[in-house]
Amino acid sequence: MYRNILLLWAVIFLTFSTYAQRVEPPFWWTGMQNKQLQLLVHSTNIAQYQLKLDYPGIKVIKIHPAESPNYLFIDLEIEPQAQAGSFYLDFYLGKKRKLHLFYQLKTRSENAAMVRGFDQSDLLYLLMPDRFANGNPQNDQLTAMPDTAQRSNPDGRHGGDIAGISAHLDYLKSLGITALWINPLLENNMPQYSYHGYAITDYYQIDARFGSNSDYLALVEKAKTYQIKIIMDMVFNHCGSEHWWMKDLPFNDWVHQYEHFTRSNYRAETLMDPHAASSDRQIMSNGWFDRSMPDLNQNNPFVANYLIQNSIWWIEYAGLSGIRMDTYPYSNQAFMKRWVDAVYAEYPQFNILGEAWLQGVSHTAYFQSGSFPKIKSPSKLRSVTDFPVYYAASNAFNQNDSWTDGVASLYMTLSQDFIYSNADSNVIFLENHDVNRFASSIQNDLAKWKMGMTFLMTTRGIPMLYHGGEFMMDGAKDQGDAMLRKDMPGGWLGDTSNVFSASNLSDLQIEALDFTRQLSQYRHQHPALQYGKLTHFVPKNGTYVYFRKADWETFMIIMNNNEEDIQIKTADYDEILQSFKSMQEFGSTQWISIPSILNLKPKTATIYELKP
Ligand code: CA
Image 1 (cartoon, protein in one colour):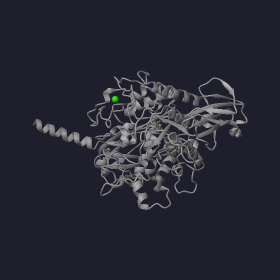
Image 2 (cartoon, protein in one colour):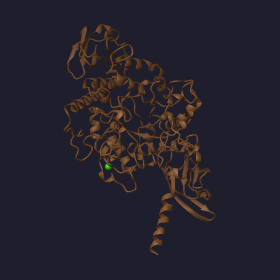
Image 3 (cartoon, helix red, strand yellow):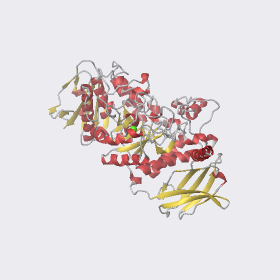
């Protein structure tokens, strides 16, 4: 008897856990520009039921069955007169009501449509939440999630969370950060390697090991009080292989299916290469990113609607200021264009950063709106990741100067800006979570590091730091991704060194941190360094000179990439300098007359403010 009861409970548990009822998006709003809403409803054998929905201002336009009998897609129209409120989606089999699902229409906040995205006035900061700070050790081990925190494993979870970020907003503020890109926080209930967040298993839930949806909302609200915008990392190209729908796909083509595992060739150049074999282009877009990351098929219109609504739901729900879209080139490009249009239709001043990890300037510019008027389905992105600048900056300070190498590589890269519709919107960086740490690229050399940081904060574009980069955290890609994603010292109870309280840091770390703070403060105080016109001169003898000029202020930046002192004649820069009489060096309070000869110390980047 006891055994039978156990069995019965097991059956009930399995029934509910496997076929838990879902309605997604979980709620919606009145007053959106787009009046259409497509609900995904998942429940056992729902295809045989009839829907009854009675709510003033909501019309059921069409009900679509799926290939699985356990789904219905319901097209609703929310008329302008619809009021916020709640109602039920009732599903009947004959006269018998089988399902009674609660749904809510909320009032859209008045300011939602006017949310301003990030731009070159901002300083972005990327952080990996599992590796930033463990604010709540109680969520480190959760029984429902097999991948628990084990800090000794470099590829395991370390326990960082939303509480940890929230506790250190003052630190980010002290660095001059105004916008925070957090690697994905959505549920990744994967058996291993779940810490990085790019194998999403639920698009509507924050991973419980990071916190809850309300914790995320509270973080966004708290960050606003620090004038820090939150940029959400989204992944449309692939989901996690343990995503709940993988056990019961609505349609066979919900993800791209192959008889044998088929990996993307990661060659995004195939998208714009006029000589590309179409099979290469196909495998680039439709191959799986990894065995654990099935490739979502955005050509299926229900997948497309699902993803578009999901992103709008998060912007509206959480009050986001931006999205960083992962692996932008890997998704269907006509769909991505439609998606960006849909977001900007609801939030005209919003900003989306697309990850376009390509080597070439033209390849990168392909993904920026308006760069190539002639291409079919042109991208609508305003901001792209500027990998060409990253590659140039990683090498410039190590190389011997030549026609193309050393600081000339910075010059050469920026000289191709004509191809972008707006290079000022490019997000520039010296490192991110996928590439060599800048400190490792330049052999932990403080002088070279300062040159890189000065370049980052004074050239055109939207600068971005990556957690730890502010104090020269190192890590080499050839030693594995975990080395690029080391824990922030002090984020865990008992850490011997603590960057947040500045205790037990090395002299090098202290100097780097101070430099980052001074430089970011300087950039914030001087809009010419954010918006000013960039004019650069042809590099000579391993020196690179450029100006940022606005109507009210002008800056001159000089880099000496040589291992020895060098002298430059200021008359060589008279084209701009002739309007000015005095200069003040960054870090100094003294104005001096512009001399005819400037002596530059080895491996230095100097910023001068100019005065008539
Ligand atoms: Ca934790």
